Length: 529
Image (tube, rainbow, N blue to C red; front, side, top):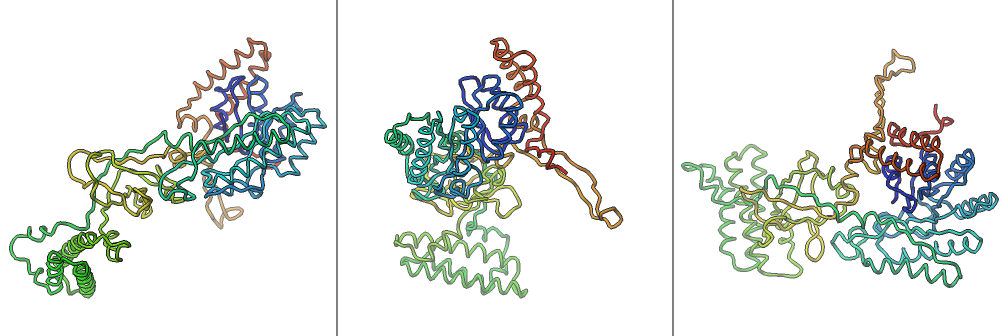
């Protein structure tokens, strides 16, 4: 298992025995480091991965106070950078990890402590969704050489953790940096295993146990978002709507309406490509003239409605005719008409809650209808959500052969619900829209400016951030169950003679006290003001 925050540590700890590894990444405060040491006292295989040298110093100070030697791992900043949108997670400018001088300083300190065996793991992370397998090979080669150097120096490092990055093929253009990958699972595994094996053999050192943290690849497929279509807007309303008005409508006698009626007739009579294009050009010009008349107050609402219906029907007929010409590349009129005649499908979901990465970084997600699978989808659609935000839509779609600005869907009709499925949303989407890394709501302070108050302000109220126990309950990890699991684990270790009863109860109390702690790191007292 792997955790990267205080709530994740609390959730994972009761699930870890003496033979199941828990890798602890991310920034760690004193409470987290202390709990990890307590878990090691119980015999649990818990490895804090040092992200910065000061973290190592704090861990050793806590361990010294207990008279124990901490087991640990180290994240290293490699010179190799990742490939793809998240490339900045790796390389010498990455947010976490020790530089080569810091690593040597840590190793020297362990040697002075006669504690070489306590360094059990080396770790690097290139970033999520690695696009280029050669970047991974280069990073693994660099890390394997560092591993070999340290083994030859006498450090019996057991684990080599290659981090995350195994990509998911979301579709789209094959091999594109963000949504598709140009390698498979077997090639990824070969790039890691063969490279490490080759270097270990050449340097005559034992091969390590290889670990990976391929969270995206493990979780993307586990979840699908199912949403019903609530309604559809079709710009090309049937022309028969004009004939449904009772009696004669004088608005139909407007010259600009007559011009559009003629454009519809020309499109219906057209046989050649140029005739369809001309009918479309005539309709577009007449519609612009109609809008100018409307702005000047010379066009009635009835005439405007007729203009809209006639214009869109001319567009529909012209597009059908232009498509039959099957030109490659298609003429510009075809591209314009396809974009304008796209239906808008209103669906019961929020982009910002359920597929946040599409809005934030343009991540593609395969979307397809869950009904009518034996029928050919004939409509070109754009999917929009319930929110009032103009960004609440899906702007790019995975289609056969690549990507497009529209999604092929069936014609919407009253009756049974029509559902769409958003696939590969299992990685990050739900938790990003809610509470990434289980960090949750931050504390709030409501401050009002006032010239009558000391310092020209006053604090109306302070709202605490969410607590670990409440955050875990939101994602179905309940404190009573976690408390029971941890109690059973501590009791078993006491009965096995691994810890004394008073030490076991101290560890249990330390664990349960974190239920009431903030999900965020606590500042040391020396840094608080």
